[in-house]
Image 1 (tube, helix red, strand yellow):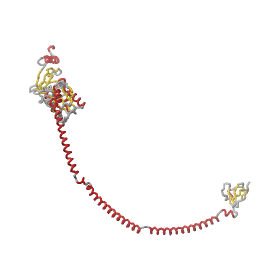
Image 2 (cartoon, rainbow, N blue to C red):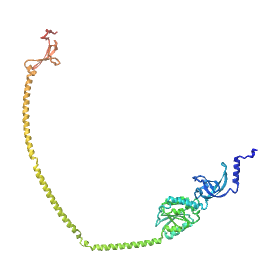
Image 3 (cartoon, helix red, strand yellow):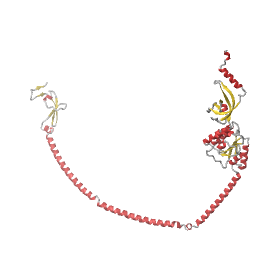
Length: 453
């Protein structure tokens, strides 16, 4: 009986095969409103499609999503093409979307409007436009080498301004690789840098054909170009993102060439007209200056040039007289001040005071000399008295009267018999010399006589 029961996996696999092999589900065209959409960068996209009564899960793999020309948004009504299958882990069915486009508005138009809105918000359309060179020498053209665009531009340029050089930078103008090729050539022109004007364009076509000129990378390459850009894409009624970003938009390639170069005949005519105007202006200027010269030559100042400096000479004389008078007055005033100061100096001169001080100094010197002489005499008297007194007390005087004094061998004075012994050598000092003697006997007036051996 257990053989009658299926596992969940077996049932799910069976239902999945039914979905996968059903010819009506292998390619389904579905319309609905996008729900639960959250953009995942560089990844698979998971969302739902719904209408008023039902909802189905949807998945769009990265390879298919990257081919979209617009960005899906929440609530957008779209047309999708895909196949229905079952996701086994959850047992839910879902649509695997291969293609998608807005419902009611084509995907290219939707993408065009989205990019236009975003770039406009950034200010790429309103940034300062670079002025075209009025007389260009070299013009770069980025377009297909086999299209009518380059032929029209060359033909128009040769007809209008044949001295300008046209350089073609061949690029793809249609297909998925066209935008990158156009950007590469724009950058190449700017790297070379020796061009005055850059024209990019192609002939008319559907929005799909013109789509490379609606790509963001092309728009940014144009906006950052250092060379002024003329955009000529499609017909007059076609307006691309490149037209909006370029410095100048031309309706046709012929119009682009006419905007890029002037008419040589008109330039030559303008040169001739300007030359004539310049010559006439120079002639009138010379004529006016000649009239001024004649008028100046007839002026009295040139006929009698001495009149120019007569007034100045008179003023110089007057100023010289005033200068002499002022110098004389100043000299007299200074001389008067000098006399006054000289008189005051004589009155207050220190000569008398100096004489008085000299007399006082002489008197003081005399008094000082007298006082010094008197003092010196007194000192001499006192000195003589001190010398006389000292002479009376001098041991030499005593010795001269027959007295003597005795010292031992060390010249120490012997004042007592206790200082010597019999046999001691002594020195006896008298007035005119010294006697050397040996003590043989000592007599002490206070004690008995002592004999020496």
